[in-house]
Length: 290
Image (cartoon, rainbow, N blue to C red; front, side, top):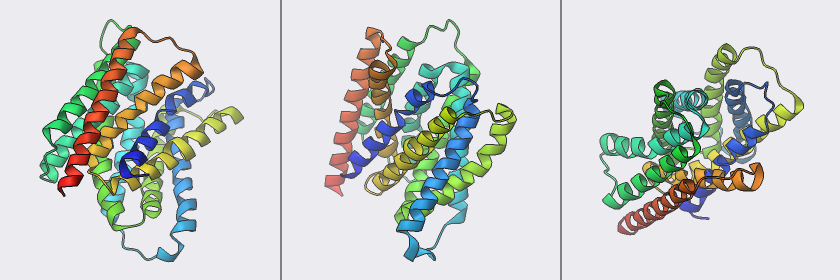
């Protein structure tokens, strides 16, 4: 599987997050879900590093960048859950995921002095527009929740910053070890905030099952695929391809949850698919010119 396939597979795993949370017990705070999934992801990468990176214990690590990535992941995790709670699942998810590629493209242009191609921007904006249409079709709010929307935009910014810095890390060190440290930092930063915002932890066996799936599969395995995929493409393209997430979420909402979306959602879905196709074609042209 090539880099594009790896990132798309990661996005599909991320797309299962909403459906998994649908089955979480009502008393389980979303803030605790966010914090505990960071812990589970860290345990996933620690176990993986112990198996795969045993002979590379003394590899050089850029600790400042690792802490920065952990901070970005913690901010993304908590601002996303808080933003979604304030603005609604559909609108909040669309803003967080949709703004990520735009933030990444701008940061790549400013920090790395590499402006994405016009076709990349066309595909990204088309996909973002499609995601917004899907979100608006799923919400009936009369007033826009500006605070929640701002938190979701912050989530998109922190996710894009994580991707750009993490790409540099995984190009210089082992993927499992890098992410073990990153998610350990994210867990240490997230848990106190989860306890502060979520109150005492109340979790049942069903809740643990959801948290373990979210942490080990929808986060750990997904970010493993994403990190390996970033070795073969620009970080901005990797973030843009994450727009495949709402496609998976849309399909699961139909097949598993039993939702019946409005026809506007289908139009938005076609926009997301078309945008992804344009981004993939732009990445292929870039690879051919290298």
